[in-house]
Image (cartoon, rainbow, N blue to C red; front, side, top):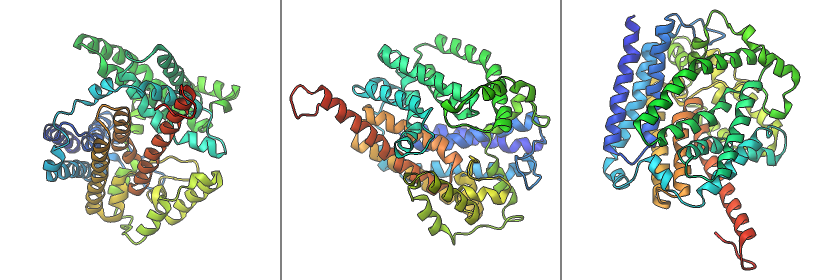
Length: 456
């Protein structure tokens, strides 16, 4: 198929840009991870088209095939990669001052000293508490805000799995078992992330090629089962919906989950197709295919309202306020609610993605994509350089906050509009320092040998 040339060419072009960027600024990571997501999406698009060339978008209003959107979509992928590379090349001299002599990320993690293991234990406990935290109340809202920090800490814990104390290892094993249980029985596949990130960290920490080869063989053997399991979960969730709390799982849901194999087929898609298509950001494809011929550009008129709304910390006012903002998104068609115009329901309980690519293209076409891409890279690089200026690269804060920034670059910009992601970055970073400093001061007070002192 000639359409395959677009994702394949885009994949190799982005791969070249990413490798060149790595040689240009070897000690900086966020811009590379931002481009890495679009490289992954281009490769995924090629695989999906090979498996089923007539794949349809998950769209309730417009009958679009993925192939129709492919040329424009790949152009946007390449544009985002060029934005990452271009910003880094333009500022290569000042940025280069922060890269000389910096060890690789995994080496920084292994070099980090106290209190990293203590923080990893804390974040493992918070991950376990998140299994039951989706209820009303400020304390539970605060616990929910630590979930993403726990996700990235799983990667750090995996890299250090042979350095951490046995107690910390046990905490992470229990936390991952709980998260995987909720993923299966509550229909939340994202709860597999801690297990996957922990495994990725373990793989990168293996000392020899032989050990990594054996690990890859084990993954290859387990992969078919994991693909089918994710398909079961997707089918089951269509029937039962999603639950937030592990404590809300009852016998009926367990029975439905165990029998999900009987309802596996969704249309004529195979388990492999279901998993691959779930990894692709369908609103990106819909936005570039439908704008502006079917749906006009949104323009920039309501930008001020969107900025003000996204920087309102709604969760502090309770669940009713959260639902009110989500309903406003649907009515005013900004934020995630913009996906409704393209046939994707983004209601009170929907988690449909509407990334900065779709956000930018729906506002101003390729200019919007480029503008938001440049701004995103500037924000990420600014945060990474600020971190290096304030903390040593191999310090506890240095490795945990940097890993969180990479999670945003690779995962959060994939799912959410630009200004929502900036708010997410600011609040979660502040949340990290609030959690760790309160914990540190409390432990210092409890273990101080002299009255009235805090041991830091």
